[in-house]
Image 1 (cartoon, rainbow, N blue to C red):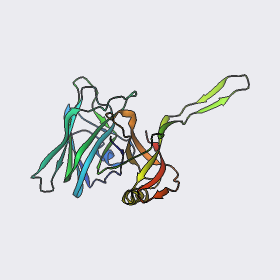
Image 2 (image 1 turned 120 degrees about the vertical axis):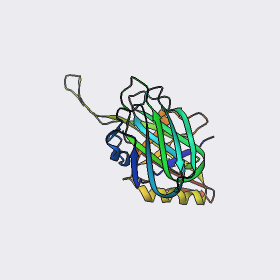
Image 3 (image 1 turned 30 degrees about the vertical axis):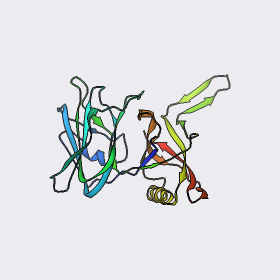
Length: 250
């Protein structure tokens, strides 16, 4: 069974793209700031991490990838002599999305060390030029968590109950949050999770992927920021639980 995945995205020293506009937006956290491909149907994005770092997770998020679009992820050594494909070529879209934007997620079995990460992709002929709102890579942590964890919808619009019995509405986004309780944490896992929380606080986004026995689906992927923190609860050295909530950034 796959545990709950938490990943702090690594910063990029630089980003190189095959064509298009807005490459700088691939280094920003806002998924509404997008890189848009040019005329090429097949292209690439290469990120420089600035140093050799172990990597086992990569994502291109908030894309308009067509159903038949494909991608692959390659980790490249600092001297560019070793190229290790950690994912693909495979279908770009993670299944299950109900909206207009889709995620591509790679979860490698083992970490691979490298300085550069190259994303290659093909967009279907006849489809709009590929747009990507988020590129991230890093080394994930997986934790056991309790079954009572779950999602909560958040409607940022307004509803006013009118005196005549009807309603008035103001527009706003509808998004989600995810509350989970990491459980059975060892002392080492508590320290690891604590270090993550102290690094990001409530002001830096993280990637969170719900665990389980089934393949990852779109709604199990969360990119956002933590909400207000509660103390963790320690039963013994091998059983600490910590309830946390992540609010999605859309």
